[in-house]
Length: 142
Image (cartoon, rainbow, N blue to C red):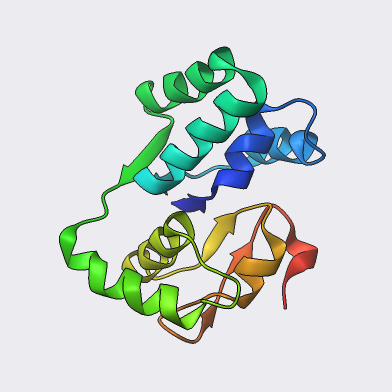
């Protein structure tokens, strides 16, 4: 499973985004499943609706409903780790969606992600020292 961030989904569903063609190519070439979290879904839905209207938001929700994307739950047990991560990366700052993806990477045991967020996912570390590998923008690796 490859982790997916808000920027990836926004670019995929927005033909005017500078990363749109790359997201299409990734989706055509990828031979494994995609996974995200509810905070990423919430953030993506909001941004798509705000920028492109309800139809774009509904296309994203339809993809979720069709099962194209696995959804990982964030539980009450994750709240302590979310607080630790938010404090650690307060200078960026880290939002809830990004913290949820760091936790998911820790649970999956890898940091392979699709994200347009070069700055933050270059800085973030899962398990406190493991870097993320951005499959969307591989040249952005530290």
